[in-house]
Image (cartoon, rainbow, N blue to C red; front, side):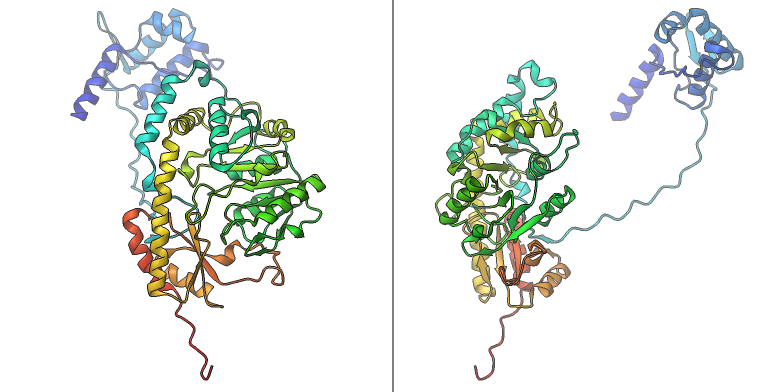
Length: 493
């Protein structure tokens, strides 16, 4: 059926002629425009681009298209007819000769496709939600409504601040769900947390400069990717010690800014203690500093009351950064910065005069998704699912590896498994051999963190959200199979 449609289309094209796309750029050479047209037509026939039987446009039409005299076209046609490349018959027009054989290309030896890299059998890496749970139907409904209701100006150059519909929706949602105090004019849409860091600290592709300067205090454990990004922008990062109450903000000194994950420290888990939340605000006020609040998974809490944003304590001292990477999907590339008023202009200047990063239609779809209540319903559903997965992980460890302590599980999409001293590296290696992808805790440790202030502990970071629902049970079984055994008691101890 498909072949018959293609053949029908080809027959139609041959009957009515085709746009020839002829290049007359060499018309200044020998013979002028007539010779250039003759060469271009001949090349099109010889290469097979104009197939045998194709009807060429009348002299007048082609002359008008190319901006040449009618006689120029007539002379070029006549020369190619004389050479046998074209035929001309009364009432049939000028066509490519049936005997005109295109240039045969050398037969190409099929190239063997490179082997596809095999992924892990069980993916327990942190940082990714269950891709199979993306709310396709609800998102599609929001896309349709957003497109139908979009004003015409949506399809012009985008506002670097982001669509007002999304900024208004975020203003209401963040106030209700995260305790953020802001207005639409203080929100700048970005493509995620990494993009926000680039705008705040480094020169962006648009040519704008950064908003802030280092040095920047960071938690002693965090994403190495973020530290590398900052280092590439020339920003020195200074590790803050961590303990069971979160970052030791009392160790802040001459830094101009501090980056924290106060709702759920990444990756060790646990919220920043209330006294330290107040203390870091006092530091920012006294030093004229600024706090960067990474709210990467603040919506997912299980065994505790919601922990509001530090930004709510002082909106003029905190830059609140969030995204849909954990709640919906990192593929959407949608995030936001809630800025103190004094930084808005610089952030927009760094971003550029037009929206160059985030699809305006995606912004409108997310706005509808939030306003319609679909976002809240999805978060509640996923919170229940991820809590169930957390409980299954804890139960599996209690049965098969009771000597392994699980921490950081009151919130978020991952857990930290504390291992016996000296076993982290061998556990990660064993997991790799068995097709289990996970991260060692040491990968997240700041290279300048000291043993005295933040003692290193062996552990692995396990993502509870990454596998699909049907694959999670097998992933847990494989995980338990690679964990180190309990330490043997010392004889006589």
